[in-house]
Amino acid sequence: MGGIVCHPSEIAEDKDAPIYLDYNATTPLDSYVADHMAPLLRTGWGNPSSGHTYGKKANGILAIARAQIATVIGAQPEEIIVTSGGTESINHAIRGSAFAQRRLGRGDHLITCAVEHVAVLETCRYLER
Image 1: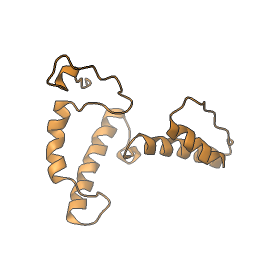
Image 2: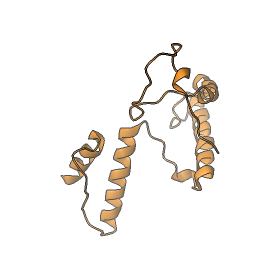
Image 3: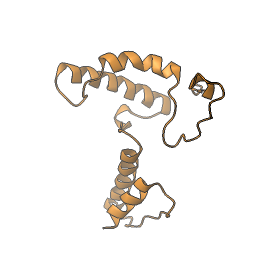
Image 4: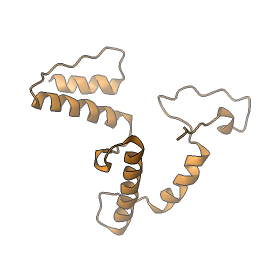
């Protein structure tokens, strides 16, 4: 399965526009992805945790996506965790790992450095308390 590549010329009409290099913050949306997401954004926008019709539809869409991702990476659908972004993902991963290690009696040590993303540092400070 190949990756999706978005050439900078697809982002701007102006071929002389600067090349965007801040992919850690956000990335341009590939037209293939946008075309496949558009129908879901129009009709599958409910809260998947809600019991109403829109939520149930969104939950079904999310279940299909989890199953597809799990198949590609060799996981189980219930192992796929969907978050709202990087900070939530970092918090979930670091806290989950730290709490699991603590429960297993493997210690309370976490090592990081000052140049880490602020979300990493704040999560580590939280765990330090």
